[in-house]
Image (cartoon, rainbow, N blue to C red; front, side, top):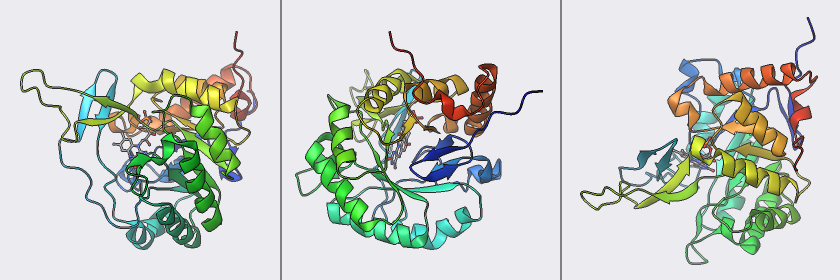
Length: 306
Ligand SMILES: Cc1cc2nc3c(=O)[nH]c(=O)nc-3n(C[C@H](O)[C@H](O)[C@H](O)COP(=O)(O)O)c2cc1C
């Protein structure tokens, strides 16, 4: 018998015992999934997006199925950063996995305040979601303008004492432009992709299915977009990438790693099958073993483009 494949990877200095983490907003703070298996089986958890104060989220309907995916307009429903630190983090810390807090703010200052609180509370990494609207700049998403993305990154870095990973929006013409700006502002890692903006309409009532009219598309349908964007970004920056978007099998994760991701996140697939992250991990390990690799990290950046 050959030695088992080494599954651990390094993401900007954060040790992941395996390269599979769960994506923000699809796994809550882990409690519900903890009923199915020990969360220590995961490489890490990107927690549900946090805001400075509690948010109820958007009115329903806020989830709609699509061919090979879902549209959501949940709208960052969360208990607020202080309640997370007091009520959710202690329980999560009892497990052996990387805890990645995901944050969204309306102003650059919001990001600074949350980075300080979460660093002091002892999370392993902060994932900065820049897909939310900048109230000061008239509702323009931070993630669609390089200078705004860089401003938020610099503030997060200034106030965080743990590695900062910036989550990029795919709703841009050239994602490498934003990636370079964020790297230049000091980000330690990048995660991509967030959801793609989409819409469904009921042809009989002529009403959009989602109460917010539009929503974010995720699930298997977006995998090829994610693979393409990870590949482009990997060619443009030196910092590591957490790849995500449509991963539901080990081979999907391998595609994102070959495109350049150091680790992968499983999101929408968790709704279909709570065990999806563990299955992806095991299938990825089997795929790497089948290819005679010693370490799963050998997949990263291994694509051979024509
Ligand atoms: C219901 C739902 C809620 C989400 N909430 C967040 C969030 O709070 N913060 C964030 O950065 N991304 C959020 N996302 C985006 C996911 O983390 C992920 O980037 C995206 O869904 C693509 O991965 P997937 O196709 O594996 O789901 C959410 C996605 C879904 C489906």
